Amino acid sequence: MTEPLSDAEPSTTDDTFDLCVVGLGYIGLPTASMFATQGYDVLGVDVDEHVVQTVNDGEIHIDEPGLRTMVQAAVNSDQLQARSTPAPADTFVIAVPTPSEEREQGRLESDLSYIEQAVETILPELERGNLVILESTSPPGTTLERVADHIEEDRDWTVGEDIHVAHCPERVLPGRILRELTQNDRVIGGVTESCAERAVDLYRGVVDGELHQTTATTAELVKLMENTYRDVNIALANELANICDHLGVDVTRVIELANCHPRVELHHPGPGVGGHCLPIDPWFVVESAPEQSNLIQQARRLNQAVPRYLVGELESVLDSVTSPTIALFGVAYKGNVDDARESPARYVLELFDERNIETDVYDPHVRQFDRELTGFEEAVSGADAIVVTAAHDEFKYLDPAGLTDLMRNHYLFDFCNHLDLQKWQQAGFTCRGRGVPEADA
Ligand SMILES: NC(=O)c1ccc[n+]([C@@H]2O[C@H](COP(=O)([O-])OP(=O)(O)OC[C@H]3O[C@@H](n4cnc5c(N)ncnc54)[C@H](O)[C@@H]3O)[C@@H](O)[C@H]2O)c1
Image 1: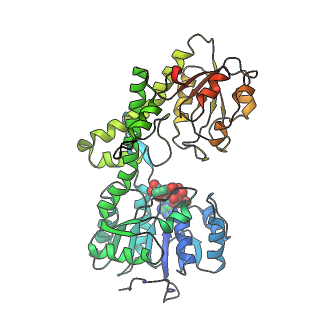
Image 2 (image 1 turned 90 degrees about the horizontal axis):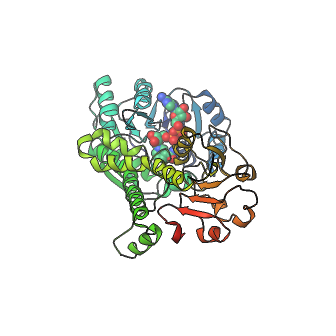
Image 3 (image 1 turned 30 degrees about the vertical axis):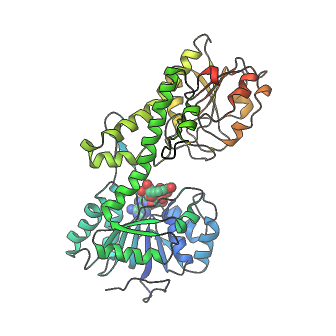
């Protein structure tokens, strides 16, 4: 049995790596480079030949501050190399995608085929004493049923004795991945206690944050509930905004005052919830316990319905404008990022399209989007209304007085409660915030 690495010792045999990281994306590549720069002998594996070539050139295929320097250092010192298939290693880390597929009524279900394929490719390389870690975000039970059970059946081994299997979910924030990889606390769940201990030993060598040991299924649920907590709380804030619309009360003031209470922390409403984690992870909880997760499902549906609600509000305000033209500001899923995956703006745009509302889209951060992005002046010229769907800093500093001559009508719908509506009102705009009545704007 191979002894766990207690620190950054190089591998003892020439053809066995210390670590084999399967999947070299936003999680796998930083993880592989982190271990490599700590002295581990690392093989990175990706099915995408372009990724393999790029990494072996010491380059990167994803945008993340500091990553290029780290990959270059790891490759130049021969601690990291990439291949398209795994090789023997003491530890295997699986960091492949866990996408979701739409089932009925907007309900999502996980697609675990990437994990299954990754396990298939490492099976021939596994030796007694190895450690296998699943880092991909997964529904509860995945590490046990799709990884551990599969290995046991295929090799006739006992997990916890012949082989060790654990789940160590990632909690990093894009843009801060390198720092958070080492500084965040990690939750490490083993299929057995000895599996968890082996995994803790590994991460102890590279992580400064605290390592919390638990079971694999608990670790899976912890990761999912971190994002579900935020989704449910945003749903509560969005419902509060709708209530405030109904009562003619300013939601921002309600939240500010309620949060003066030492045990209350209301979140903020917005145009919906986007990104590749928050709108998806709650469904992974739901698929594992559909009868027990009514609140989570309700919250998800409430957040999904926000764009429709806001477009309805906008239509009633613009009722008197013939064939309105909109300048939509911000297609990213949140402020100051370039990522437009699952963004609320996408759904707002779909609803505008359904209604044949002409829209120009402006986003100073997003480079890739599946419809044309225009420049700022082009978007506002001749527009009747500006609709803010992402809280980018650039929008905050706009001078509304400079826009009045360019626009045909002067409406502002700030779905993010991001702008100083009084300033816009003084410049002659009719303003609506999210849950902020016009009189209070
Ligand atoms: N990106 C994040 O910020 C983040 C944060 C927390 C958790 N996660 C989770 O981490 C996991 C990985 O996410 P990511 O963002 O790194 O994905 P990604 O799409 O950036 O990268 C995944 C990589 O895996 C490769 N791949 C797919 N199948 C493979 C296989 N069988 N063998 C080898 N390579 C394979 C792909 O080619 C791709 O390069 C997901 O479960 C995700 O939910 C991501």
